[in-house]
Amino acid sequence: MPIKIPDNLPAKEILNQENIFTMDESVAYHQDIRPLRIALLNLMPTKETTETQLLRLIGNTPLQVEFVLLHPKTHTSKNTSVEHLEMFYKTFEDIKDEKLDGMIITGAPVEQMEFEDVNYWEELTQILNWSKHNVTSTLHICWAAQAGLYHHFGVRKFALENKMFGVFPHTVQVPNTKLLRGFDEVFHVPQSRHTDIRREDIEQCPDLEILSESEESGVYIAATRDGKHIFVTGHSEYDACSLKWEYDRDVSKGLTIEIPKNYYPNNDPSRQPYNTWRAHANLLFSNWLNYYVYQETPFELNANINESLASSQL
Ligand SMILES: CC(=O)SCCNC(=O)CCNC(=O)[C@H](O)C(C)(C)COP(=O)(O)OP(=O)(O)OC[C@H]1O[C@@H](n2cnc3c(N)ncnc32)[C@H](O)[C@@H]1OP(=O)(O)O
Ligand SMILES: N[C@@H](CCO)C(=O)O
Image 1 (tube, rainbow, N blue to C red):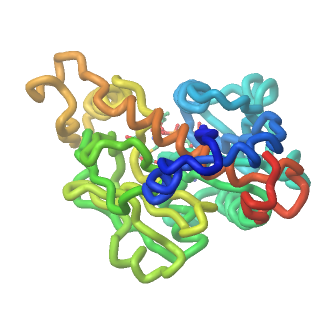
Image 2: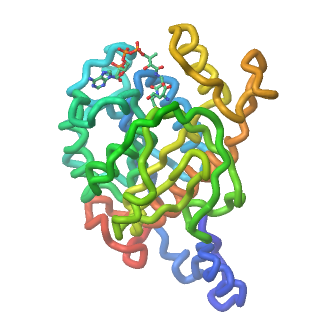
Image 3: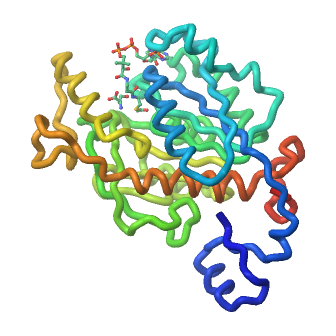
C-alpha cells in the first residue's frame, strides 16, 4: 500500500528516489476504492491445486479482489471434472467484452510441444492479443511466460538436456524495481521445466527488461517496461511438496529424473522438504497486485485502461 505522508516531509524525496510509493495527503483524500477484478486463466491439469496456491497468495494482501476463473474452451480437460468447470469456471467467450484489472496465466505441461501443436493455442493467442487492450497487467507463469514471450515478442524456447528441477538462488537485476520491492539480494525459487528461454533473445527486445535471474537456472522474471506484461519462469506459488510430488510421480513411472536440487534436507528424498521461498512468493504477488494493478488501473475500468496513475482515481 502507498504511504500517505504530509506533502512536504523531507523523507518523501528519499523514498521517491528508492522508488517507494508515497502519496500526498491531497491525493489520498481524492481516492475512490473498489474491488479489483482479477482473472486466473488456469491451464494446469491439476486445477484445484493451482487455484488454492494462487488464491492463497492473492488473498494475502489488504486489497479486495473479485476472482474470475477461466479455462480454455477449446481443450477438453482430462483431469478436472466437467462439474467443477461448469460450477466455477468461465471461458474467454464469456468475458471478452469486459475489462480486467489483472490476469494470471498459469503454467501447463505442454512445454515439449511446439506452441502451435497445443490444442488451445489459437484461443490462447486471442486472449493474449485481447490482454494488450483489456487488462491493466498480466502475469504469465512458466509455460505461459514462454508462450507470452513467443507470441508478443518472438522469443523462442529451447529444450534443455536435463530438466531444470529444484530450488535455485536468484538475484535482483534491476535495483529498486517495484515488482521486487523488499526482496533479499539473493532469494530462492522452485524451477521445474524441460525448456528454457535465452537472455540474449530477451535483450534483443527493447520493450523488455530482465528483472531477476539465476546463475544456474537462467532468467526468472522479464517484464515490459510499462509493467503491462510480466513473465515469470519459476513456480514461486508451489507448495513445499509440489516438487516432491512431481519427482515421485516420475520415479513411479520409471522415467529418468534427477533428485530436485537444493530441496531435500541432505539431498535425501526420503526426508520432508522445507519451503524456503514462501516469503518471496507472497511479496512478488502483493507487489504485482499493488504496484502494477491497483495503482495503475483506472477506477472506471471501462475507460481507457492505459491511462496513467495521474489520471486514475483508484
Ligand atoms: C513448464 C510448466 O509450465 S510447469 C507446469 C506444468 N506442471 C504440471 O502440470 C504438474 C502437474 N501435472 C502432472 O503431473 C500431469 O500433467 C498429470 C499427472 C496431471 C497428468 O499427466 P499424464 O497422465 O501423463 O498426461 P495427460 O494425458 O493426462 O495430459 C496431461 C495434460 O497435458 C496437457 N495436454 C496434453 N496434450 C495436450 C495438447 N495436445 N494440447 C493441450 N494440452 C495438452 C493437458 O493439460 C492435459 O491435462 P488436462 O487435459 O487435464 O488439462
Ligand atoms: N513442472 C512440470 C514440468 C513439465 O512441463 C512437471 O514436472 O509436471
